[in-house]
Amino acid sequence: MTVLVTGGCGYIGSHTMLALRDRSEDVIVLDNLSTGFETVIPEGVTLVRGDVGDGLLLDRIMSETRLDAVVHFAGSIVVPESVADPLGYYLNNTVNSRELIAACIRHKVPRFIFSSTAAVYGTPDVVPVSETSPLAPISPYGSSKLMTETMLRDTANAHDFDYVALRYFNVAGADPRGRAGQSTARATHLIKVAVEAVTGARNHVDVFGSDYDTPDGTGVRDYIHVTDLAAAHLAALDHLRSGNGGGVFNCGYGHGYSVMQVLETVQKVAGRSIEIRHTDRRAGDPAELVSDPSKIKSTLAWTPSLDDLATIVGDALRWEERLRQMPPR
Image 1: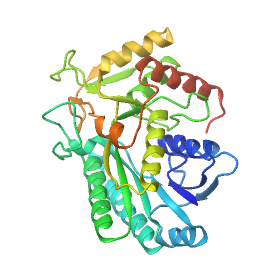
Image 2: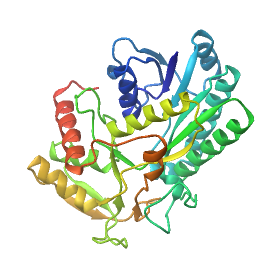
Image 3: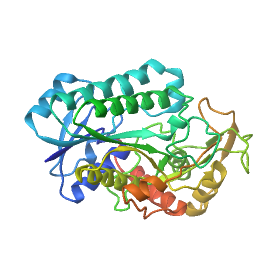
Image 4: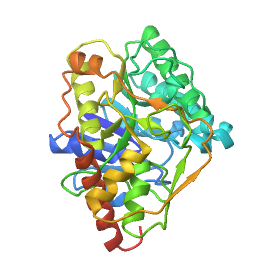
């Protein structure tokens, strides 16, 4: 049986693809390489270059290969960009996901794991956030992901089809073995931006908002190591394969760090200073977003192994230093 990984050349998709291969799963990657990199594909993994919204291409892939599951990462992920281009986000994240789900139903693919986001919660009244917290996204990005969750729920109710939606909090770090990391140009993730600054790829780091109702005035987030997140996808797949019902699960560690705490950790780990510039808040950013991960730990038997900010930063920094030595990608 084969697993189709959409967006498998991207940041989180590549780590999950590698984790699947590490346990000898058969994997096909579908990626248009708009933000991903073909160089992450190891021997034994088939790469199909194309768009996840291409129904004819999906039919070909699913007709030629019996798929056990789809793990769906392909999509757009930048919150402020979604505010400026909502229709682009609804097309790429929602319409294209509908095409993929429909193809799964046509070809009787029984299992689907979806890359969702904590942005579906918007600005929560209570932190930490559980899966039963109100869903009130404040950006088109969050809304586009919530629409896909709704499609998955309704499709599962109507067909022989099970799914898990994993709501990511802030993903960071890199493969401890150095095989993959965050390589996207013009990335907006804080730890990625900060390690770029300490390695000379940027000349400063912008802090968006210093007047939030948080201990130091900067936004607080729950940072999860990308390798632990990849393991959560495997745990979700095993859960579905065992005949258990699906659902939605938070992916985080249950505690947060402010922007300034992260920047202090990056400077300490790197042994170098960063120029920090304070600027206005960004549209769509809540003050604090921290997960309650108790459901995923108890239901999927997921136990994180890299819950340490300095470890996350160290892995991200080593990957960034390696990138600086590579030819342009």
